[in-house]
Amino acid sequence: MDNILKGYFNKELSYIRNNEILIMTEKAVNHLPEYFFSVASSSSGKYHPLFSLGEGGLYRHTQFAVEIAVNLFNIEDFTQDEIDCIVSSLILHDGFKQGRISKGNTEKLHPIICGNELDKLWKNYNNLYKDIIINAIASHMGKFNEKGKLPTPITKIEKFVHTCDYLASRKFYDDYYKL
Image 1 (cartoon, rainbow, N blue to C red):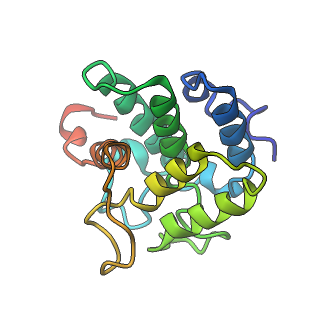
Image 2: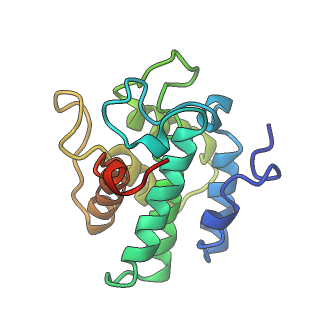
């Protein structure tokens, strides 16, 4: 499946200015499991707002997390390369949310699975961006991780990615945005 050519993430990818980060991210999007574009963001429905549930909900959640970041960039100081790493991390953070193959529910260690998949996919890239993106993805769950089995955010970028994902998952949006 050539996800980029089908138009997925065109807007979000347009925020990335560094060509190397853009190429890495496009390659990764094309490597995402097909289920990513069709499943809900929460298999139980307990942890995400209504707009990110149902068919394509995980994709919409991801788009919304990037949109939150883009708006917060107006009040945060990041270099363009840092912005590009953040956008890439948010596009990819839940890329393997149900594992390599969908089992119908969230894989609790999906941030590690995603990082491992990207590390293999990007094995020919030997740059700092790769590590920044993979670390931000691995820690995006923050304190909401599987009994301490996942890293928690340490760097400013990691904390920002976690914050954007957290905000995109809040159910209070349901009170303000009626479907």
